[in-house]
Length: 343
Image: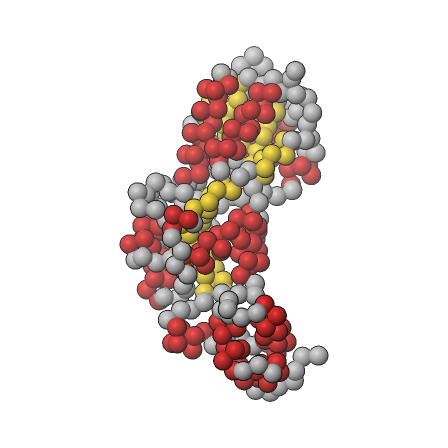
């Protein structure tokens, strides 16, 4: 039963409940890495029971830290459930630690660094997680110039190193091209959404190398504006379906589930059947594609795991670990469901 108390719970309350000293309770809630796990669990359970919340202003005055991680979240993205999965992964990792998560949306698209500038000027967090990073991302530059702890979801092209965790896009398209080649496909289109990130350029580079290695006919969709909306992507699918069979691509690689669904829909309107007339492989972050098309091949990215890794790297950076040890890639997982492989 929760303890009934009309006054706000304090460290002294927890000390009285657990029989531990005030200094031990305080150390356990701050970090407690030198304490026994049983002691830390005992303090954490008591804190949860009485609803104890640290006074962040007091913590900041004593330590200079806020115990807050700021997620600078791009609002310009088409990925299904991206935000939810990433936040859940971060939350799962920091649960039971001294850290809390603050989400800072990027509403000013004319000044992408505005949200970062706010965090820096107000020192409202101990570190920053960035999403949708570009090759020369001004947000990354600003944080590096300020020597402020940060980790990016995506690589950049800066000479100065910084912490990052990124989906291994090159490996993703290598897997997809190899799979399509083994299925006997010879004309492959990369219909990838270009959101201005380094991930897109890595995808294109990996695709071109894989096409050359397999000696296939491949093309990268240049007019990416046709994928801006689902209706435009559906119309693009209809356009593909109107091409003569001898000239039509027999396979498509896509990096966005909503776009893939729209293209498939447009091709279906023209009587072009997935799995028979062509194959499509898409990067998968949800279960929507295999639910609608049980035999579709995909390559999955675990955004929940990515969120946890980003939190892990940022906390390590805040604690002073070397940047060179905080650069990791998320290996894609092939989900091959169809069985019609060429001999």
